[in-house]
Structure formats: C-alpha cells, structure tokens
Length: 588
Image (cartoon, rainbow, N blue to C red; front, side, top):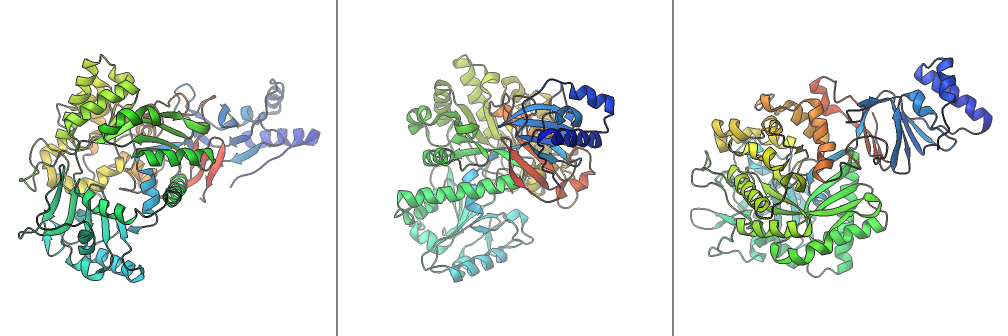
C-alpha cells in the first residue's frame, strides 16, 4: 500500500505535523524542535516508514529518504524527513518494507532478453521430445520458409538422454520431420551452441565436407553427417544463413525491431527490480539505436553497454562509440567485450586438463590470445575497460596472463583500470590470488553455480570442482570484487533467484554445492549494488544510497536480509524507482 499526500496552506501544516507524530511516535517537544529546523526545499518524492538499507557504513539503515529530481536529498528517520514533505510531494509509505539501492545486473545480453521474450522458451523443457513438440506446433502456424527461433534448452537438465544421440546431444531427424519447410534454430541455454534442423542446414549449405570453422565444431555422427549441433563459432554458419534471409529488411525495419527488443528488455528488467543492466557486448548498430532511444526519452532503465567486435575494427570504433552517462545518465559505452573460450555445458570451456566425462577434449579457444593482446593494447589507448568471457581454468589463466603482461608493458595500474573477467567459473588454485593482486574484477553469476552444479562434478571431477568452481569466498579473500548477475537470457534476469543462489548454493534437489563458498546476505546484496557500480566506474553516483547520489531504489515484499532462507525465492518486487521516478509498481 502507498499513500499520496498533498498539503496546502495552514491546514496542510497542521495535518503534516499530525501525520509525522502518528507515524514516528515523536513526542510534541521533539516535534517542536523538528519544526524549528531550517526550511528546506520540498522534495519531489519521499519514501517513508521503511527499512532502507543504504550499503553505506556511515549511515547503514534509515527509515525514510527524500528525493529532488533524480537525486537523493536526505536520509533519516520519519520525523527528520517529514520536513521535506510539501504540497506537491509524492509520498510512498513503505509499511516497513525493505528498500535497497537499485539492484544492478552485472552481466546480461540486453537485446537478447527482449528477443527471447518473443521466441520459443525452451528452458522448462523436460525432454528432447518436448522441444520437438513445441517446434512442431510453431511450424503449424508459421508461413512456409519462416524461421522458427528458440533458446534455453540444456541437455543436462532433461529427465532422459535423447535417443539417438551423439555425445549426449540429440540428432536432427525428429526436428526436421515436424518442420520440413521451416528452418529451425534453437540456441543452447549457455549461448555457446545451437541446434538446427535439415532446412536450416540446407540454407547454410552444410554438407559432409563442410569444415569446422576456427574456434567452432560441427558435431557429426559416425558417418560424418552433421547431427544439427553447432558448437561455439560454428554457430555462425547457421546465423549467417539467418542473416541472409533477413537481408531484405530496410534500415527502418531493422531499427524498429531493435527498438521492440529494447522495450521488452526494459520492461522485463524493471519488473524484476533492476535499475541498471550491464549489457555484455553489442555491435555498433545497437549502440546507435540505444542512443536514439535515450534521445527520445524512451529508455526507462539504465544500460551500461560493452562494445563487441573484432580488433580489426576497434581502432576506428572505440573512440567513435565511447560515451559515459549519456542523456540523464541512462547510457554508457566504455568497455570492450571478447571471449577466450566457450561454456562448460557444451564442453567448450577451455580447460588445463581434459574433461573428466569426455577425455578427448579440453574445450576450445575462441578469440585467440593474439587477438586479445591487440584488444588490450587498444583498450589502454582509448581508455576502455576490457571484459573477457572466460569460463575454463585455462581460459582464465590465459586471460590473467594477458592482463598482467599488458599492465607491466604499459606500466598501467590494474586496480585503477578494473579490467574484468566475465564468469570466472572454474579456476586453478594458483590463479585465484591473482584476481586480488592484479585488481581484476570477477563478474560472476550466482545462479550459474546452482544451475550448473548437477553436471559440474561430471565435467571436472570432484578435485577440480572443489578447488575452483564458483569460489566466491576464496576470491573475496584475495581482495577481489565480485559483481553479480544472471547472464540473461541464459538464465532468467531475476536478481532474487541469483541472490538466493549466492547465499544458499542450494540446487533443485536440495543439496548444497560446496557450502563453504556461500556469500553472506550482505555480501550478496553488495555484489548486486555497490560492487556492480564499482565494476562500471559508477560508484560515485549509484550503488548505494546517500545524498547526492542517484535515487535508484528497489523495494521488496520480504526482507531478504532476515527472512528464513527458504522464503527468499518467493520475494516479489513492490517498487522499482529509477532517478526518483516509479518505473515499476508490483503487488505484495
């Protein structure tokens, strides 16, 4: 419940005083002293009667806050903030609810979230047969030749292994039967593999003699025929065919499609309590459209975006696209994203030793170390942060080596540069201390630990898993900063689910995955607020609540810091406030 209060004239002053007394339990003498306080500018927005956790040591918890424009004016008790209530102040009574700095997503794929909202959602499929059925239903409604797109499947989460299969992955025949005239492309939950039917492979001109591209694999059966599974860079063979089919779209149609994705992603993020989303790599066209959306004042959430393209274009595009807090601090581009390896689920993560459940492979290198060194040098030149996707222990070691070499060669201070490793999921014990020593930020996703746990032991074996799988406490003890997120649409962008995974490490079957690495509840909150702000060089304007900072606030139906652990996942978002404006209002 919330209350809007507007006071006018002498009567208004009396009502305001009575309201303050009733709400705070302040005595008449105390109220008189408060009334004698210097006059202040009335606030545009007041949040009162809450448990407002600031993530600031000097004033860790208050009852109320006042906002003018997009900025916090004051924090304090109900009585102290009452004097900021004027005739046009919007007042929200939090009724004791928890409010925190606006939650910030450290690693998602923003337009991918919007795109996923309108395609087949495969994450809840229990079997390969479920997916075949969903595609068949979509094909029955589609125009001939129209692509059927989906994402979110994960073979390790199915209740049964598909038959027939190759390395645990299905083969395309059943999918091709239900969709003979429509090309099908189904992205793996990780984003590092995809599955195509016969029609899609025909359009991509995939034959038995098609070679594996660098950094990618076409999975084949014993006869050498493509099964439909395209791993890592091999996905480009199918997505290039998809792009060719869409080549006839006008620039206006392309922009309109991107705007739709941005709108859907914004709506989804706000409904989950997020005030800032870090986009983990987008091309120049997306950046250009994002700036237009900001200019049109149609971006309701803040987006901090990484530029994603190869080093051959970076020297031209880095200075062209760098922008910090564009518009009303809605949009930033000041990082560059690369990827040194793939994902654990598809066995694409680059490991120091072979996979325990498939000794014939140690994963794969995608962007070469040479390319990354070139990217690092350009980033230093143009004042860009470097963010490298690295999941396997070798991928992480190679990335740390490149960072350290660059810091020494250019005499740079890594702790000031705040270069990042995205995911940092599986580490060698020898490399864990290097995060703190070098000032490298570990941009990790709490939800991945519990989502991946069922197959981590199989992929890595118990020794490697215990040594370096999602080792949050080990990293924090080195002084490393962990910024939390979901990697959406790989996972739901819901921060409450990732917060719960961070503090519980409890899987669906109730087991706890290496409990000694759990975060405390306050550590998890910091990983979703001030740590993400630090990782994006924005700790001076957001990530905590204090006068002068942006009024970005998330309000919850339950107190995440104190409720029984099992109740955390049922918490809902009551308000998402961005720049002093209520951007989303939910129900308890």
